[in-house]
Image (cartoon, chains in turn green, red):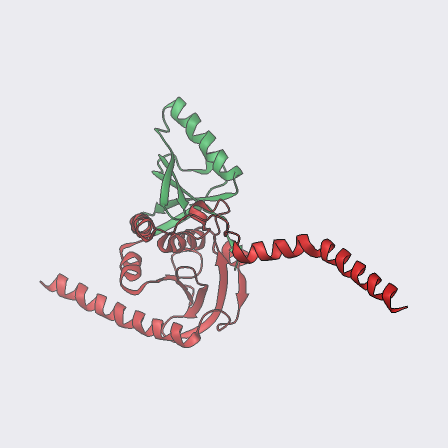
Length: 81
Length: 192
């Protein structure tokens, strides 16, 4: 699993990466996930259903992330323009 | 009588001049040496281009082939509104760094515009703006995952406040031509 964060002037950066089935990696991913959410970012998981349709899910807790998800994308929270 | 008055005048002028001298010196110095603007990171068009290339790759990997091709060819994405697989009778146009526009497909009728931004308060490189494709992806992710939540965060207006309705209708006409061409191209590929 890779935790990615959108960055102005850069595109995405890899915040953390690891195998969620390995305890040490999972702990590192959990900490990085909390850090980004504490910084005020939103987190979304891109998904694909059985018909091939692309969709996404917002996640607010690490346990909300599907275990087979490949990526979690962090981006600044929305503000009225 | 005039001599004491003249003396008093001279004394007043001297004291006033002495009091105002530092101010005058600062003004003259400011004119000679204008203060430098706060240091901002240099604008690097190469960096911005590389950022957009990365953002496009991420966008492509998240949205469907149709949406990616639409962004590549037209510069915006159209997504169906409503929750679930069934179309809800309205759709959204997602532009980079412009409001999301709700419209009725097939009628080119604009419903509303949703003004929403994703400002990065850390402002790396001096800007809070995500690359264009990242801004589109952020809107797509938020709409796909929580349409009502995003619409609730946005400022809703009638079309025309920030977007030019005529320009959007031209974009809808371009989209219809693009979709017709895609269908024709797809049919040709299947027939071959």
